[in-house]
Image (cartoon, rainbow, N blue to C red; front, side, top):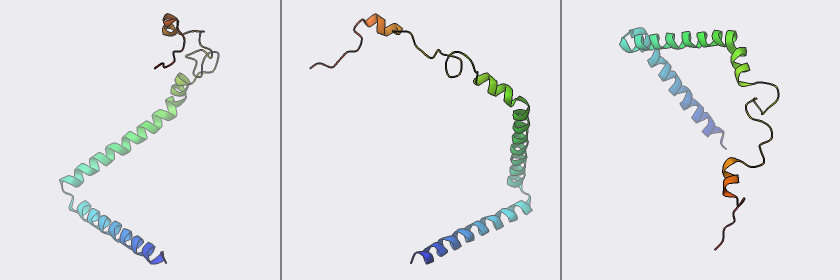
Amino acid sequence: MEEPWDLELLSRLADGVLSFLSEFAEDWAANDMRVALFKILLAWLVVSLVAIHFAWKVYGTTVNDMYYRLGTGGQNGGTPDTAPHLSGWESMAGDGFKTHRE
C-alpha cells in the first residue's frame, strides 16, 4: 500500500536532482562571475585536502605519538593512575562529605 508513495517520492527527488544538475550545467557553461568564483574555491578546497592528506602521511605518526604515550602514569602519560588520598580543597574543609539537613 505504501509502494506508490515511495515511487512518487523517488520520482520527485529524481526530478529535483535532474533540474538542479541541468541548471548547474547551464551556469557552468555561461562562465559568469559566480562560476569563476566557484571554480576558484573548488580548486582551493581540492588543493587544501590534497595537502592535508600528504602532510598527514608524512607527519601523522609524529602527531599521534605526541598525544598517545605508553608508559607509567595515566591514560596518556599525563596524570597518575591513583590520586592522592585527599585533594587540596577537600582537606581544607575538614568535613569530608556534607549531607543536606533541613
